[in-house]
Image (cartoon, rainbow, N blue to C red):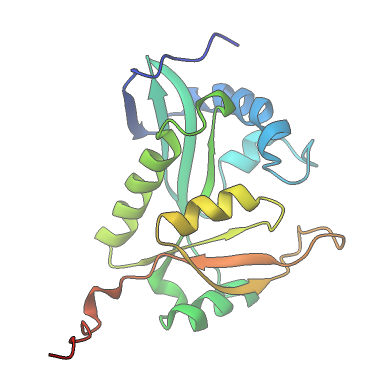
Length: 189
């Protein structure tokens, strides 16, 4: 893999293209030993299927210095146990949720704003459709959960998806709630 881009490099987010997928497979594989994402590695199926999913609605690639270095997508939320838990936790129907999925970045760019830029684009897309962004995070991925919390995501529940090994605690279900419609408390005078 080429050397990491400089700190001064600009991040560009654009729709993912088919020719990005092989590069993203390499980025995913290179960052997995550092991030432990995905939790199971090697995957029991081609990594292209992890990146490009049937439930995907939109997907983006991040570029730095003209190189693809990260990915994020928005997926539909299924009307299954996890979807219903998110729905109850958010107080909205499953159809009004949008799952931030497959967010990963070249591990050499951690802390450089690439993941945040991808997240911002995905969240903006979901919100432009009046949907609440949700995601799940493996407890072992504590740093990821901290980043999400720092960016305003809230834990609204826990779940045991079928892909989660029995040895792992339940995943955290998180949502980026929009509190703008709630009244602002008045200070006592």
